[in-house]
Image 1 (cartoon, rainbow, N blue to C red):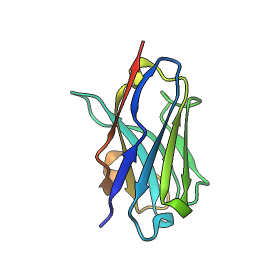
Image 2: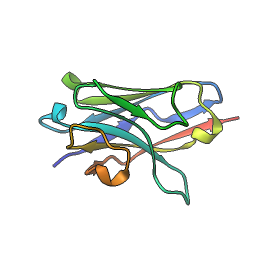
Image 3: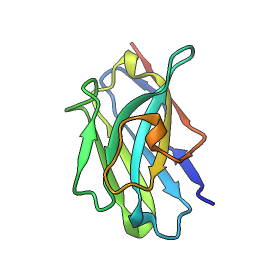
Length: 124
């Protein structure tokens, strides 16, 4: 059974930075693409970023491109989301997810397993 645990959320002022981490309890973490999504109350969960099994391919939502960076350390079973230049509209619960496909997807139904989420709040 795959378990994902996010951490690193918190309260930050606009323009600030946070780094989210997601540790996966997967025997073969390097077999999985990983993604980050976010959700605010009353809205659908939206794609943020994704990374292929070896980190060779990344993709980003237009809203975060140039500000956020996804990376992974397969030796630590961990995927990261470095968030710079944060804006109030980035406020959301952020979720990591695993996808057994070698090509990272951008839709929620591409992903089989999800973490519990970590809250990110950006004040203006």
